Length: 500
Image (cartoon, rainbow, N blue to C red; front, side, top):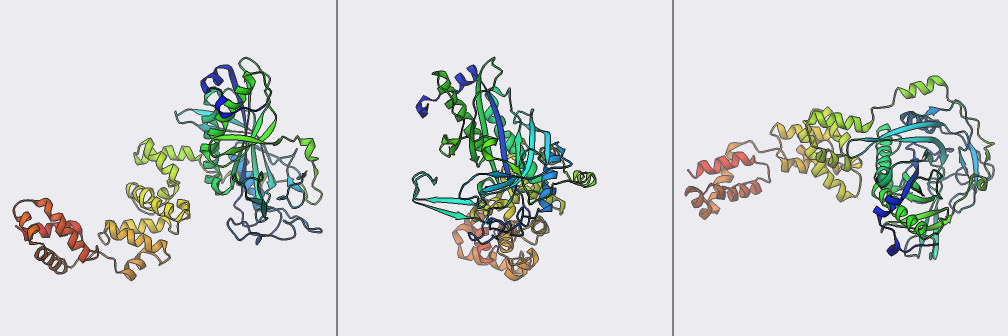
């Protein structure tokens, strides 16, 4: 039984009659240099099918070799999620046919994952936390990427051509699976989003993934079922696949709650299936959901068991940093900024960059101003994340120091940063090569002031008549004549003195 959007049950009615039960499965691509079982490069954005070899293409006779760095990243993820690290485990073959899976099976962990029985205390916007229990975190390899052409939705339905790129096949993945999340009530969509947000921040803080949801390096499958109030048995769940933004996680959960409730309210039955999320804010049916038996798991015969030694686990435990939100709370207090300002910095991905810039000697106020405004603008223009800009916190701190020393005005400093972004070298080199230092020769500035006053006698007369605000026009002319290299405050003083 299906339900039209117009028939969705009102959200208040949903939470009045039903209890939602959620389960989140998050796939995270690891930022290792090479793939999970071969030496092919693990880089996003390369030309299609240029980062492949017989192993990740599944050619006969090729054999996998386990990536040690990927195993260590998986252990660190498990430790950060308060999991127990398994002292021994095996990989398995998950058998299924799909064009983007060249071997017709995926190497994954089934009944012996690397990490089990953890939890994450998720911070919510009202200052409280919600504990999400982690069932497991296991290692596996990613599939290739299918691009469907000719359909309005970009999906296979209606497509005339499908293109295959196997660059992603074999990229290391860690899948993090929660236990059923119960008792959330009307806050279910909010908690789902908060969990994925906290997980993203945690993984970024660990440095194990760039967690770019827009590029697919972090993908969320949200499971949801409803049960009548007072009933303990779980309802039939659906799984919304590959939700690729934090907002979409929240929207997908809310939509499924309203859709399922509308079906149950008229005596219908929920189909256990995967569903696709449409960015317009709704889900559509995918395929019937397989069970573990459908995948015919069996131990991977070409890989030895994974048996991390206890001392390795403890060494990796020592590398786990402070939880990102605890760090942010401490930094926020140190900087004396509002929740709104901190939220803007977090959303821009600027907190770590500002912190690093402060560590290089800049004030937090100046570091926030440059990263949170001008550099965010440059990142948006380039269509990249803030930390992908070709400028380091040390270089930004150097530019700030030049401004504070009076060597640069803020306008000139923007040109210096643009030069650094363009690959013209360090800030000092850009200043020298572009001739951008503030002009300090009083005679040069006075000559420019005299020339501007002579060219604008009406403005000069207004200043002599007491209209000091008119000096701005002369200051602007002088700054233009000196290519922005004069000190504006000094120019203004000279203009007023000349008209006295």
